[in-house]
View 1 (tube, one colour):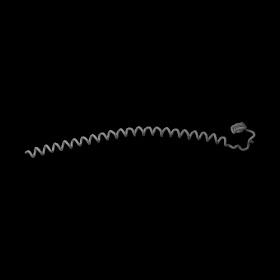
View 2 (cartoon, one colour):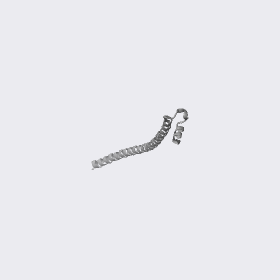
View 3 (spheres, helix red, strand yellow):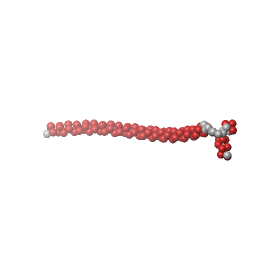
View 4 (cartoon, one colour):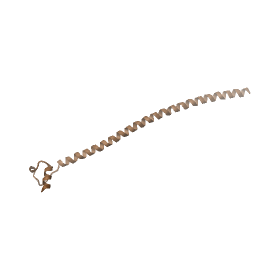
Length: 103
């Protein structure tokens, strides 16, 4: 009977130690999970900021392409060569075009 009681006490002691160890491990896992969640939240905030920046840059690039196209159009206008009108008869390309329209 004493052996049984001694065995039961030893078993309870082992179970308590095991439970205590398990609680410690659970606490460690919960702490690691909380830390990981905070890191994920921070990463999501950074990702959102980077996406906004990319969208802004894409809009700026589109605007720059439009401006470049406008500049190229004006450059082409200045590069026109009009045949059949003497260069001394006009000062600008627009002047020649207006004169030709009147004719």
